[in-house]
Length: 193
Image (cartoon, rainbow, N blue to C red; front, side):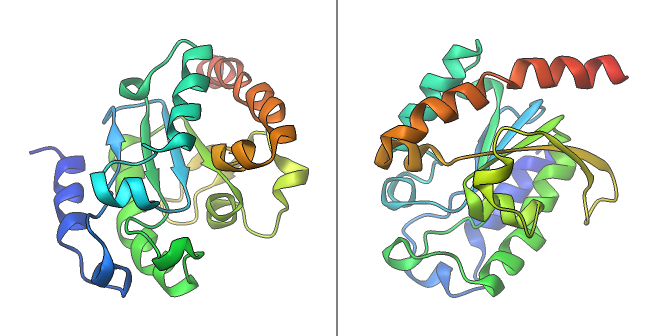
């Protein structure tokens, strides 16, 4: 069993915080275990909780459309969330829930996958990796920073959450424009090696 599969099994059995009490399914993440791109959202919604798969609702469909614009699909990337269980009533995850879940599982997933870019989807995911910034000011701008947990340099690309673009039509074009920067950022990373 791969490291990622072991982590996934641990997530499915986890009872470390109150989010586990009301979940239907934990949502570890899915995709390529050696992906160059890792997408990290805030947390599972209703559809994700029911199916145990991240980004399967309307926001997920939009994410898939954007992946197609850069010649990729879900199987080419890894998609997960900061918290792996749905917060009740889709509320924001609480700081202790984020710390418990991501401090344990998300960093383990990052170590296993070793992505070239971590694409944060929405302000909550961005805040986890790039604290103290406003998404309206940094979206679409790659940030090369030392990962506080692994000690390794990591490239982060903060983007608006696909759901925000669905609810606020004006963000749709902004998100698509930012998304199309991904291949050039990957190329720059490859040229640095």
